[in-house]
Image (tube, rainbow, N blue to C red):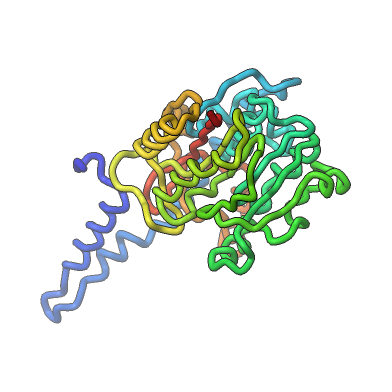
Amino acid sequence: MSKDNRNPSVEIQEHLRQFMRWVDPSNGNPNTEPLWEFIRDIGIMRLNIKNMGYDIARHLGSSRMSDIPAAPPRANLGWRASTQADIESDWAAYWCNELQVRPLYHRKLWELSYVLHCLWYHGKIAPGMRGLGFGCGEEPIPSYLASKGVDVVATDLPPDHVDAVNWRNTAQHTDNLEKICQPNLVTRADFDRHVSLEYVDMNAIPESLRDFDFCWSVCAFEHIGSIEKGLQFILNSMSTLKKGGVSIHTTEFNFQNGPTIDNWPSVLFQQKHFEDLANRLRQAGHRCEPITFNIGEDMLDRFIDIPPWEWNKAETPSSMNKIGECPAHIKLSIDGLPCTCYGLVVEKG
């Protein structure tokens, strides 16, 4: 990697090593004063960056979000990364309204809108359709689909799985149907009629889950152990579908070439991994939607959000308490690597 394209976290580590090489000649101890001068304002700089980025998002959101269309446009989204333009689009406005949420520049809303639009585009949101959700957590998609007469099997890790506790702590795991039901989207009677829950390890999809019209997951298959396991999951998910069924998924996308994260609780896919996956799917006889890797060129596509994602109000100035109401969270830093969401759609051949 050239010096100009270095990972910022690598450069910081080099600076820190340089500081720690500085010693007091009188006693050989590290000279910590230069180190302190370097790091003392990092918290303030992070606060400034997030404040300015979120203020830009609030300003843009008040003027650039689309009006809610009467019906979603016939847009074939294909394989794509989340962008500012997508969030400002008619299709995102429509599906956010269907979910009864205000459009924000947030990648999670992009993911939910992307999955629902792809299902609708392929004619899968209709009474009598059968859908299978992987790693559903407490997301609203099962409730919304049930309100449209779609039969849904929502799945998640078994409650006693070693990883389930961490996901429960962040409302990303469900161990009962009460957590899935969202009464603002569906009546309890329709929910009970159309939604069931099963515990499934995504690395070992049971053979009992077959003949669905579609399956989906939202930011789940990057958490099953490795990049290869994630790619294999997508291939395996095709076995749950009828011919002509669609498999729709979103995940993390490290959009820089170079280092990435693998063999870890959260892995980061790159363009080469998606291209490899598309080739493997085609070789298996399936049809991939058009594939693009455009990450956008608008202002918020160039803003990379940084941790923390939730501010501790007790330790934050009162003027910052509303910072989370309109986050600019399309692109973000994950372990120092610039990432966004990526969606893919595959039709079973």
